[in-house]
Image (cartoon, rainbow, N blue to C red; front, side):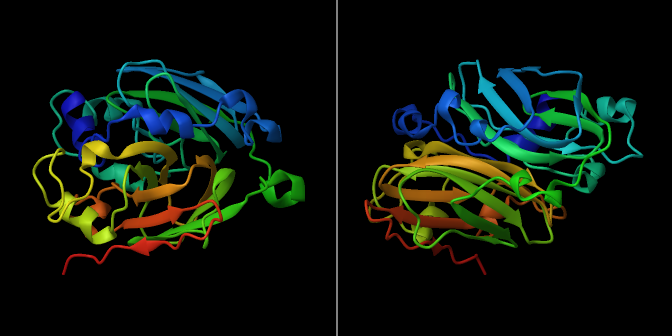
Length: 303
């Protein structure tokens, strides 16, 4: 199982280390904006290969709180399995002998999930959970059931989280608020593309361009730096984001941005080539200054 899930997760996400700034930028759950909105909460705790969560939760708009109790950064995602896929098939397809992502993975529904989370940290997301059988997937996986009838979230205005900005993901790029303001804020994230996408948000310790990041993507070492200088992948620090989101879906994430340069990635693989979307140009760079006057910059996809 570990080999297969590594091919799904490690292929999708490079190991971006460096907790210092990321810890400063991570909102405390106790005073987070999302936590104060009153949604039912699903608590997920991960510790390496261990994933703890309830066996059953009610359907509807839900606040997911992901806490990383382990010693390494954790980057996973949430899916609702296709109805014709059984637990037995999942155990086989995600078993130790499997070496390729199962075909049904790309037929699953991805409602969103808290982004990559550093050890000792927590991240949150508000997502819509329809009834069904779900899996939280990282180095291992853990199933749970969502039961009951899902209410229509749009029935009342207060059912929709108040967002400070909107982010659009599409094939294969991002559209961020312009300008991007500093401080703690809630982003409404929508996938308008034809494939699932994620928002992996990092902070660079120095200015960098989207083209330099693409150069890093083509390198063979996380310690390598672009020609002419710039940060390495190991210098980029996680500051949250949002896990896999299906086409047409919307979810909400909270970020706390200090002035600086930020790089957004999507490492979801293309269903046909398994190439991470970031390798197809799904990278965006933006700056945040005290006045919130930064302008997002996108990468040029490889020809």
